[in-house]
Length: 296
Image: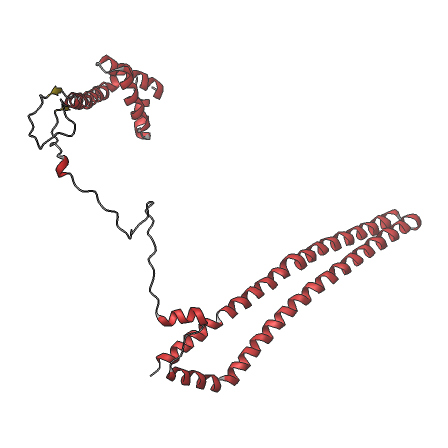
């Protein structure tokens, strides 16, 4: 039995047991969506509707049990409208609505307007915005950090100044040598890449000239050999010329991409590294000044 036949048979069986056809169809579709491979193999073994009689009976019982609470809840939700006679009121007491009132008999206690809860005041400083995003509170920075933001360097104490400038003077030869070495390496790499870019363009011109010369020599010499000596040798020489032209063209394209894509990328990365290194100089000096201030 396939799944369609099983669905139709199950709906018919539920309808025969007093279930509405629409409800039976909905429960059957829900059951079909939850079937596993093992259940499908079991359904494939069914031959008649009597094979799943127990399943249809259990489903019908389940549907009836789910329908009973709904009916009960619906009957409880029906409220009776009653009319209350007007209550005698004192001279100083007056019902805000006045007259006869219609209300429903519910379990909720009456609401006294005089004793209603006061409206909550909106706090002046809200912790969150209406969309639930926390408002960033103002962070308190130390005074020296505020001075750093204005001046760029950590202020030195009297002892820190003495330690800092003494260290600067004593390490000045080493620091100057190190900075000069870094500058020399940077300039050398920069000039090397620029020279390689220029050499690449010159190489492209040389490859074009060499490829053209090889092609012309091969074709002209091949034609001469065809006319004078042998056609085979001439065709061979023409083929060599064409191969030389193709090789020169391929090398020219590779060199062009190297000169316009590869080497400029290396040059750009070198400049970015130099800028990043220069940006780290001020934080290094600030850490150094902090260390001079903290020394005892």
